[in-house]
Image (tube, rainbow, N blue to C red; front, side, top):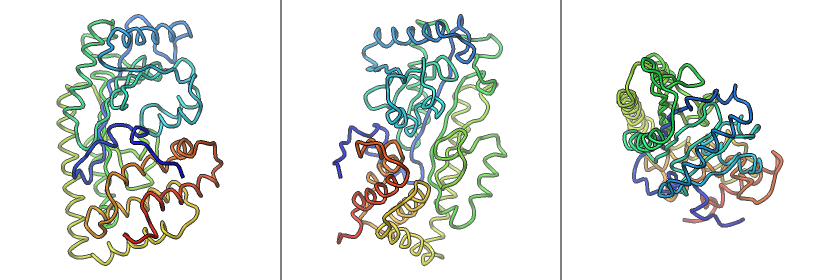
Length: 351
């Protein structure tokens, strides 16, 4: 198998994260539109091109931002799939890339998405729980854009967006959480209901329009009207802290009262990953989750968190094919996925 360069991964994933445990990453997104153009879904090709050219000119004039613009129609499907799996574009943009573009910094921690649902989406990704710093980064870029471009903004309602739920601040803030202990101690359903009850949204691994099939969850604000950006962030951060505390308490219970259950869960995962020769994506994420839980609770020690972080992306279909350097059908992907995990986690070898 090929060796993997650190530059293959986005910066937020490879940066030294310390001991963040439950919280994997943070994303801030600000939706913006031009005052004199129809929203992308209603705009014709000329208006869409005009929006794209304005952002392209902005990136050229602000070279210090190091934003490199790429038109999605110039990328092949695997390259677009990489961007989707990294949370930078939607699946709709993978399938219909015309007139859509993405401007990214080298590490992909800051990006501008052009002509998807809105003319512009400012996106900031960060390792661990970094809502405040990520918001500040997005606001600085928003201020720079707003000083040079006329954005659609209503005196009473705030920023105008294609989707009514984004009107106001245009802010969508989300945090990716890993909650295996709550799932194992059957506390996950109650926790999710509580989060939904207080007006936040809970989504799966890929965010919007994805089902809750694993123990990786994205918690985000739902409404953007009537609150400031700082108020939205403060509310979300407070809820995330409570969820993290409940997950940590569930882990303490597992270690103190149900250690055999925990060790069995981790041991079975390692056994399957060591011996299997074909592995689907959903099963791979579940097994890697159990291994991650074992590492974070001290049940196992030889596997390092940076490797497990990288595996969250490497097992995804587009990343798997990019790593292999070829297009693969589902069955071949399953074989490559199983072998990749064994080799990257050094399973079947003495530590």
